[in-house]
Image 1 (cartoon, rainbow, N blue to C red):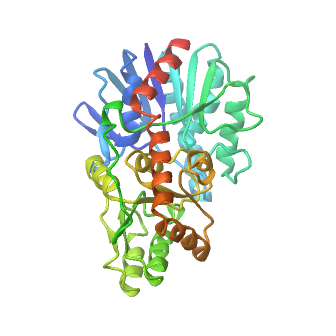
Image 2 (cartoon, helix red, strand yellow):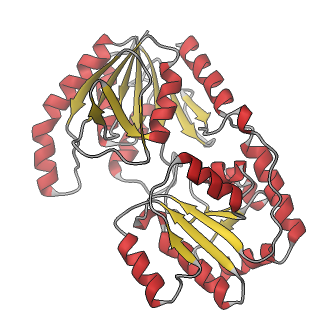
Image 3 (tube, rainbow, N blue to C red):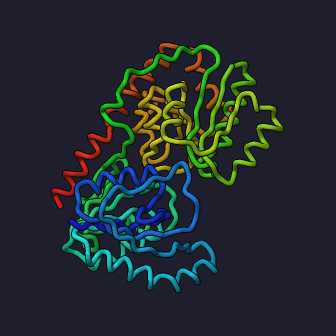
Length: 373
């Protein structure tokens, strides 16, 4: 089977190998195990690989490079109009050659893929919508357009659309799905965390406004002011790093907040295992792997109620739901810091739930999707 991937994820090349953001590539390598050839349509950039990049494992891969684009400004829109014909042709060629078409959405390349797949109604297709599928949420118009096309069973035929969460009113081709990081073999016993000083929090994600890393720091600052011996370690890079470091310096938080930049999967795993809480005050998510990963290793999750997060946290039974109010949120966290039994209950419920979504289960579901296509 020839499997075509249409994605906006930037890639780099080294010899015959192609690299991209590791969580995405690890997932695509699962699909690739069950096909004979990969065709990848994606932006190819000239930059150094980072600690969070990894390579495709497929022995037979054809890469069709395209330019990235945006429609957020007048100049960007003009450049986009010039690029679209070439990008569309590359996508069309890949779809024409494929036995199975796989779209990665939401994204600008995915949007073009949504439109062009209409020309192939009889080919088997899947789309992974990795963003927030909640139809009531505020989304860019390009995201809403992708959701509309994918949900329209007249325009989009022979496709299963994988989304996070179950949403009322979904069409028959919308399939609630999940993602995973760890395997059944990774299920070692959870390390007991006593609520003794210091209490460790971990943030993993891009240091950008949408992830609200500053709010995570301010929560720790508020808990310190209330007399708690707490520590926060942030993993990730982004344009807000300098601002965050300045905030910590001005407010004398260097002893309780540490920024460690991008790190390897093993380093992040060790951080989860050593922490009491994983925190993600994000404005928008699909299926936040950081939360599921932290829960897998016994961290109690603290996250905003976006997308399927309330379901992941069982509406507070498996973690803490943020209201984005420092006083209220710090008080809720304090209620757990002062109650070992409550912490233990949330920890064990969270770990049991997360460990039901392993890579083994994920691969089994992928095989079913390909066999049904």
